[in-house]
Image (cartoon, rainbow, N blue to C red):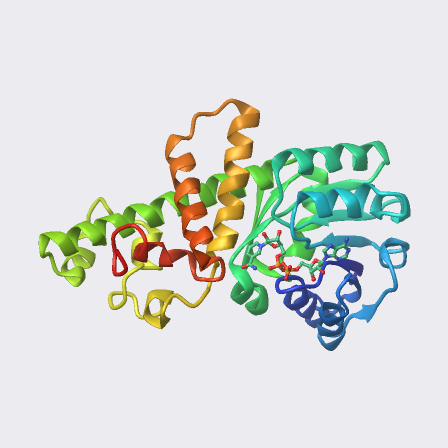
Length: 297
Ligand code: NAD
């Protein structure tokens, strides 16, 4: 069992800590928010006073922070993880951040002689709580080999995506598909309404035809066909529109940095910007159905 330091114990981090403790690891946690830190302590972690105290002397240091700026600061600042972590420690950043920040921190970790993985997740708060997250991991074979067993305590799937930053690259590509496909499915239901085609009939046909996709069959944006989808509880999140917008913006930043053309990704980003600007930040991302010609149009 490992001695683990965990930084960033908010909505995702706290339940991840719970599962590490349940697996028998010793976890020391730090968060700028006293409320978040209390949750981690309730989940079985020992509180630390600062980043130095959480990072020094650990076998593994895990971070679950809001965005790239926080990750750069926590790892790279004076008194940060790279300065304080012990020789031989494994570093795992599970936050969703821009590919460039991930690669910058990887490079500095390597220069400091520390092994690191970027390991963003899919599965949301429910998956974090149930220990069923999917981890998309970027880093060397050796670093992945060390990280896999620890991450498996918090998830059901741990996939090596490639070298440094590849986990973040996989995450933004996947979530760009998700954002675009949710809008596509929403537009199809809006069109069906106008054509007088019954929603359940469209679902029954498309879910067994070439329109089949996760946004339709697992997370249908209209009430009825998929009883567990947020559409049946007035689009209570789930995965918020603000989170989807964050990930779409990361995809567009990555596209601009790498010279990729992602016209539908850009359009999806613009639509989610409009949806969020209308006061829907905390609404489930499938609520975009109400804007693209659906119930509120
Ligand atoms: P959150 O805001 O609930 O938690 C982040 C925590 O980091 C907060 O408690 C905050 O106080 C802490 N923090 C920020 N800066 C810090 C610093 N310098 N030192 C110590 N602590 C600091 O966010 P979350 O929902 O837990 O998401 C975390 C990450 O997981 C994000 O990158 C998000 O995109 C990703 N993610 C979230 C979900 C989801 O459904 N919530 C799903 C997949 C991925």
